[in-house]
Image (cartoon, rainbow, N blue to C red; front, side):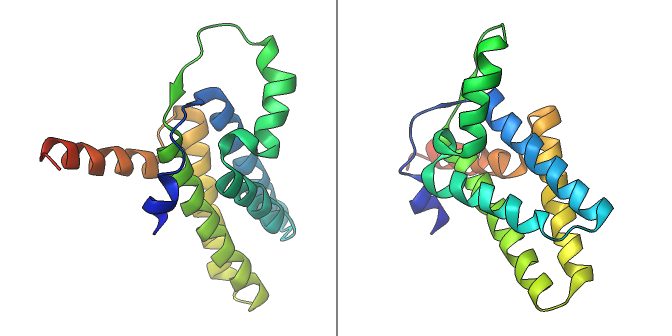
Length: 149
């Protein structure tokens, strides 16, 4: 289902924009955990949800990056496929939605664990550019293309 939804996005997106978004989400979620501010989890969920539904180009954090940060940066712009980025955002959104529901059900331990997993994947993506969902997506589609489908 997620794959069919992701097929709509074919235009490439700039890597720095996506990494900025992941960095902000990671900082918000880690601050939520350290200071035990559960309200930051649904705020991060909302940011990721808008990015997942409207596309990475139209997320509020991408707009902030493109208007305030990008004009001040130098260097070549690298792009990547929007499909893989959107798939990663959808998986992170699902994890945070589940964490939010667990917070509502008062199962805080598991909710914080899921929050930290999403924060860890966002931090990994922001700092290294390695996105686990993106890597999985590329691996699956390399196999499909090499098998002649």
